[in-house]
Length: 287
Ligand code: NAP
Picture 1 (tube, rainbow, N blue to C red):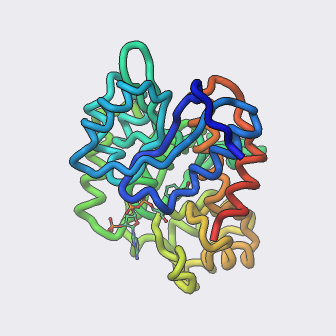
Picture 2 (tube, rainbow, N blue to C red):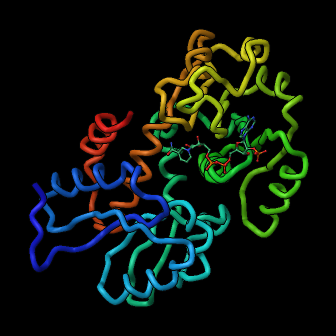
């Protein structure tokens, strides 16, 4: 049981809705494991109330908080400082208090990279192919660039959105060559890549019988390729099952979820997070 004292420090997550977030249970188990007088609470904040909520957090001395839909972009101009990676992505998911004001970053990048960093792999020879060009794809692009991939292919179904995606990186210092492709070009890309990443929601619960790639394209997969699906329900997705049947090394989205939370906790507490405790908590609470 968490014991609240007069000195308990406050952390939390803002969003609308936040009821379904797994972060409170995962973060509170981590805090309890560390034996700290601190609590992580859900903070439902409506879109129009964001500025008022921030002022209130400053007034009560909140240590920091996670940010989810619909505030990830809207909060950026309200912060004193944003890390270059979060600015490049255009979304913040972790905020912390400083004497100068609120600072923000995006720990989805750390979360995405964590399982890849554990592999013995020379990323400078790898050209990842990313399916989708939404919010998560942006964190994946920055993550792949940080790993050292010299070129990244992003595949989308809307030419217009792909153009906007390309333009959106022009003012950033992205250290990789970004190429965009239409969905129809997938077969050629899949046959040559060693790292294929799904950032679309296709195959996510309850649509568990769907896959972003049809069987004909899946058959082009290189044996031994790494196939990463950001989805964490179900585990594994149909996409990952099919990839595994074709000899791929597969990674699902749970580790990314755990590690983005661990990275946030480390920023707030300035000490290592109990990652194994967080992983166990998340797996026990996933549907
Ligand atoms: P998003 O911003 O809505 O982007 C979704 C992307 O998928 C868009 O580019 C969209 O294309 C594309 N897409 C959707 N349906 C498609 C279809 N049937 N065929 C081809 N492309 C399709 O969503 P997001 O925030 O990036 O999240 C995407 C997924 O990543 C979700 O499943 C989410 O749960 C997961 N995720 C996991 C983690 C983690 O920690 N594991 C973190 C973040 C996100 P259009 O733009 O053309 O619609």
